[in-house]
Length: 153
Image (cartoon, rainbow, N blue to C red; front, side, top):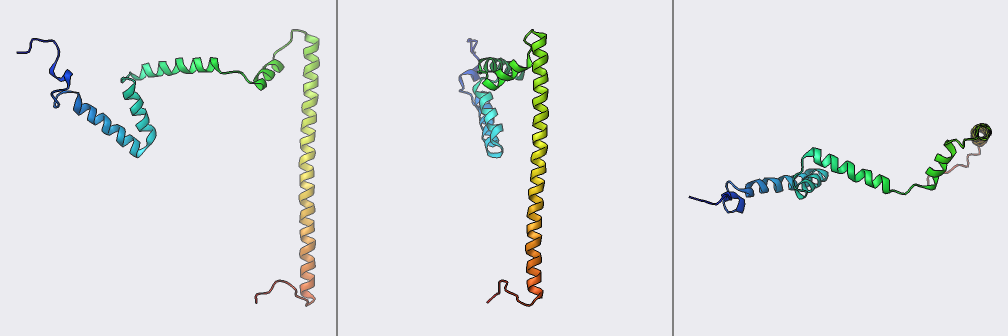
């Protein structure tokens, strides 16, 4: 009789009841995951290498890691400028002036966009008119009997 407290499968010697069949199933699942869809295989491999944590533990660890990553990420100049433009200065007169200027600039931007759309439509109409003129000239020449178009030789 075995008097030690270590079970026989802990050493890996008895393959039928020990960790080897489970490991072979795990490895097979990882291989199949990589064969059919590589993110599944990668997730299974990461889960195996991290020591089979529960899903709640993985979620909490991911939240901790992403929180520290987000805090350590440098803030861009654009983000700082946007934040500075949207917070008040504490001076009501200046805030009102700034808001009026921003509204004026926004109205000017919209007017420029409208002019740009109108100009684009004008250019398209000119192109259509030129195409129509060229087509009419071609048809008039063809009706006159002087067909000088491309020929198949």
